[in-house]
Length: 99
Image (cartoon, rainbow, N blue to C red):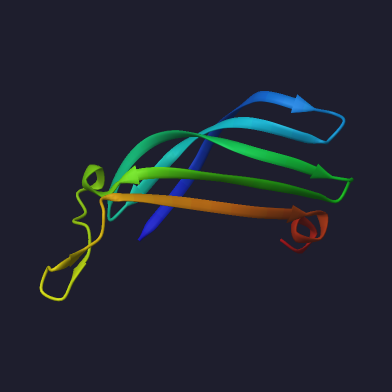
């Protein structure tokens, strides 16, 4: 199980011409019951007055969260320790109104 709880964001840059911006997000990432505070970049775009798109990713080493990389065929095929978590979130005024 993987969860992320957002706590803060710092505006790094913005471009009024493209309605784009960059943030440095901070929060608590929990993987398999182990929690660590992480920072990672987020790219955002304001789409008119009715939606906002946020995109980003974070790479982690499974060993940092006490998780053994998966293996198959009695250990002859192994995955690497690095995992990248990616997200692409679209928030619309309709989404907010319905919640």
